[in-house]
Amino acid sequence: MVNYKIKREVLNSNINFPVCLAPMVGLSHVALRTAIRRYLPSDALTIWPTEMLSSRRLPHEQLNRSPEVFFSDTDLKQGLVPQILGNNEHEIALSVAKLKSWGAQAIDINMGCPVAKALRHNYGVSLMGDIQYAKSIVEMTVRNTDLPVSVKLRAGLQNDPNFLLDFVHSLESAGASWICLHPRLAHQKRRGYADWSQIKFVRENLKIPVIGNGDIQIAQDVLAMIEQTDCDMVMIGRALTVRPWILWQVGKQFGFSNPIHFSENQNPPKNSIEEGYECGRHLLFTLEQFKIYFNENIGIRKFQFLLKNACPWLEFGHTLQSMASRAKNYSEMQVALESFFSREQSMSHYTDLRY
Ligand SMILES: Cc1cc2nc3c(=O)[nH]c(=O)nc-3n(C[C@H](O)[C@H](O)[C@H](O)COP(=O)(O)O)c2cc1C
Image 1: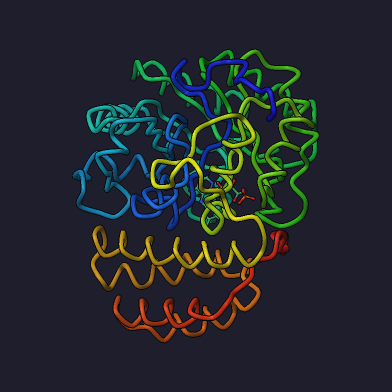
Image 2: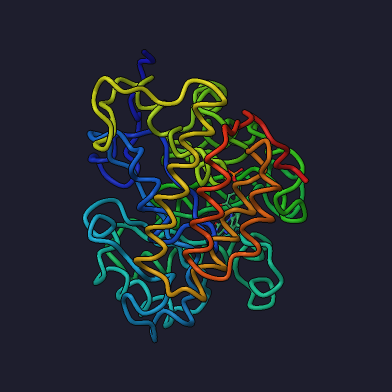
């Protein structure tokens, strides 16, 4: 068993688990959060993201009206940290007040999104072009809420460690409670290597907690990132959508109990075939959550998007993807999943996330 405790408080002293899910548009929604939570040890408390939410739209949103702002009762009870995009104080103030009234326990600011729309509005990763500007966004968020404010950022627009250091120091002095670093440059999007040495570099130089993110695919990678970077927590995006039992496996390593849905004598999948079997159970359970939260039109497209991200880890993932692409409604999707997983399937440890 690994002897690890979170060294600094991330969110608050109730957070005791070293892994969390990453904010991902189209993926970090209530249905997938609910499915992934099933694998969290019963005594583990961590933070939970939303998809990135526009502070232009949030003031006009109503709870549980659009998929991005659907929350389960469990979401609202523990660790919900919605992520916002924004640069206008009035919009940010209204947004954070609304999120707090809905149950947010902290607010995360997106300084990593490289898509054209975010760049056009001068937020997302474009905030990383100007230290003072980025600092002012954190300051304006902090002064408009009593919730902790965090920032998720990339390594920047260019490879410049001094700039990165000045940048994260300015976030710290602006009142950020923690940061999460995805160590890729803006132009890399999600290609190329995530350079974990930058997480170590930032960790060594900040007082606030640092969450590391990028290219985690199996439970051992979590341990490796903690060991190599000394980060306070590890955030996982794509791999957790398809291999959520990483939470269970890491929990075992750190001495946590089994997840509530598994008895204490059960064990997480041990090999690629057991993983294939559990993957089928996970995807079928996730589809049930889609049926609860999303109407069929939206839900089918979202489920196909989930499979696009999940299938590379399955040996015959392309077959599943093409079966699922023909599904027009939930029952056809269920038939596709059941038929695919009625045969033995296997999962690979690593797939190339970098292209
Ligand atoms: C489909 C998709 C959507 C994403 N959307 C967001 C987002 O809304 N906000 C954000 O900060 N990062 C977003 N990201 C980046 C992830 O949070 C994460 O930084 C990245 O995927 C690297 O982690 P991973 O290698 O564990 O997937 C997105 C990533 C993916 C794959």
